[in-house]
Amino acid sequence: MAERTLRGSRLGSISYETDRNAEPAARQTSEYRCPKGHNFTVPFSDEADVPLVWECRLDGSIAKLVNGAEAETKKGKPPRTHWDMLLERRSVADLEEVLAERLEHLRGRRSRSA
Ligand SMILES: [Zn+2]
Image 1 (cartoon, rainbow, N blue to C red):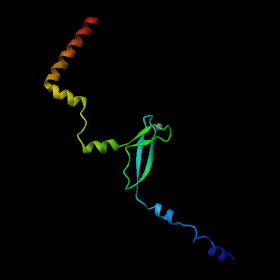
Image 2: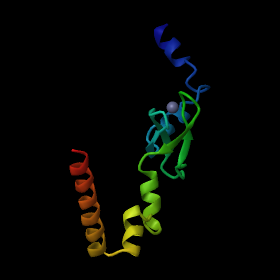
Image 3: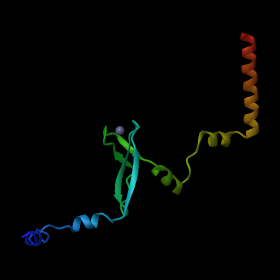
Image 4: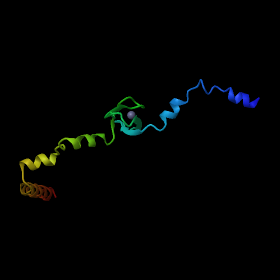
């Protein structure tokens, strides 16, 4: 009786194929962080193009891919910093002169107020 029940189980009609295939499929997990500081991960297929932004599950704001921007900018020119722009206008020697002037000014003001 027990054996017959087993044989009569609906193995044929239920497809286990989906579960079996889903598990070993290559996956990548991408981490996102929203402006409010929520961190969450989204699993993607290895072949999928991981989007740079994803809607935060907690507040619906636009979360950015963690480490994603870094990988993107590596392809192009690195973004110019304020320091880079400053160096385009002045040499380090110039800046040191300005700094010395500025410090002198500050010291003078402090001694005047003291
Ligand atoms: Zn959020």
